[in-house]
Every structure is written in C-alpha cells, then in structure tokens.
Amino acid sequence: MPRIDFYIIEEANPQARLRLACRLIEKAYKNRHRIYVHADNQTQAHQLDELLWTYREDSFLPHNLYGDGPEPAPPIQIGFGATPEKHRDILINLSSTIPDFYPQFTRLLEIITAEPDIQTCGREHYRQYRAQSYEITTHKLQTVE
Image 1 (spheres, rainbow, N blue to C red):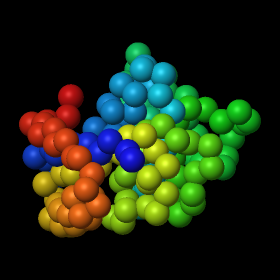
Image 2 (image 1 turned 60 degrees about the vertical axis):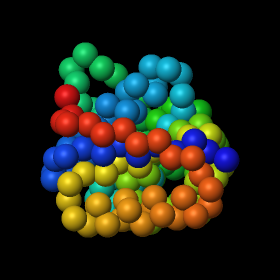
Image 3 (image 1 turned 180 degrees about the vertical axis):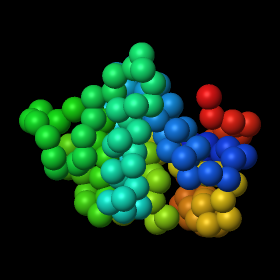
Image 4 (image 1 turned 135 degrees about the vertical axis):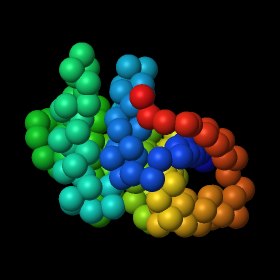
C-alpha cells in the first residue's frame, strides 16, 4: 500500500506544476530513489523531459522518456499511457486520471495547482484514495522556488 502525498501550490500556472515536479524529482533522486513520472500525454512528457535538462544549472538529473534510451535505464523515467515494468519506488502522477498500476509503488505524489481543472482532478483523486482507506498527507506550499 503506497504512502500518498498531495503537494498543493497556490499558483495557477502549468509551468509551476512542472517546476515543482522537478524539485520533488531532484530531492528524491538525491535520496537515491527511483522515480517514475506519469504524464497526461506525450506533450506533457516532453515538456518535463526538456525542463529537467534546464531546471537548474548546478543540477544533473539522469532521466529519459520511458522505453527510450540506454539500458540499464536511468533512475528517473517519464512516461504516459504505459505501465512501467521496473519501477516500484516513487510515482509522481501528473495525469488527470489515477493510473491502474499505482499500487505497485511505495510512494505516490500528486501535484495540485490553483488551475480549476487540476483542482477538480485532485479532489477526485483524493476522494478515490480515501475511499480505498489510504492515509494521505497534504503539503501546502506558497510558491515553487
């Protein structure tokens, strides 16, 4: 049963959501976790992929799009519409739906911004996790550094 964390930021900006994802990815990577980011679609996956290269000049986050790149795969994978086979550590869900494979992870992170569509999806995800008796921790942030 994964530990579930909601990260809520008051910005109504899709880029703020991706910047927070980068920050969480970096923190998890520094703590030697394997991270799978589940994007809503190919466009969002590519946006995050590009942002991870430029997120911070003093940071290197080894990543690629799921199914692309070298073997063994780097510890950070970004995917959409696929079930990750080798990842069991941290899932960051940026999708508007809850992926069926989320129970295989030890930790699940949801990132919610002040955009109405994102808030609606976040509330629905929260209700679904609660209905399954998951313990949920909420982290309210003012801005993304």
